[in-house]
Length: 259
Image 1 (cartoon, rainbow, N blue to C red):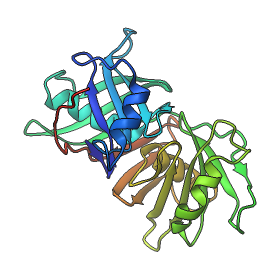
Image 2 (image 1 turned 180 degrees about the horizontal axis):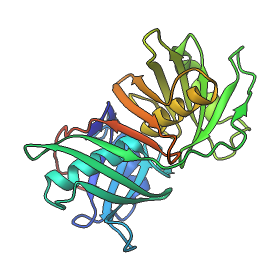
Image 3 (image 1 turned 30 degrees about the horizontal axis):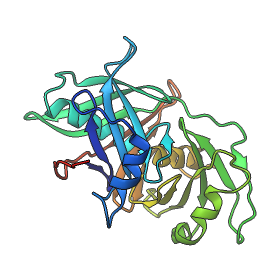
């Protein structure tokens, strides 16, 4: 499945348990010798009554991520269209807490999904890492760490993303966003995902970018984040301080793999 071009392999572990998901993510994500993806997502039963289902996500390098906004939208579509739930509001347990998915359904098909990404964490949000003359960046956590740099050259992600992911300022490594506010108010963003490199989109990265734009006085609390694979609608709602992300989710293909 893919959400705005952010593609993952999804496995229903309630039916097909995965013994070593880190190893599987590395092998299956290889775009030349495997299936090819940004990582592996496991859909499971929830171990707590407060949630309906659970999600675990492993990056292409085998490391486990806390959360993925694009993947959570795809899970909502999967659960509904594959008949695992009839709910249009799903509580999904992730390593960064329970996320609420609101499914927008027409004629039995999930057209888009809104995810309540909850409150951003803004400790040490203004952070400057002197790198090739780049502007000051903004640190935002959306359950996982992001460093957002506003620049006129978002393609710097290709040459600078890896170094910033591994910068000593981020002992747990970091997701890196390069963003530019356009004339129409949208924000063109390219992302280097921790553990996966340049990806077509990143849901938590889009949220972090929107929050950073508000903090630095660049946009209002509603913005369109234009990524390589598509556009996500982000609202940082003043009433509850939660960030809401709306975007597409699509099936690409089904298949079987023999161990």
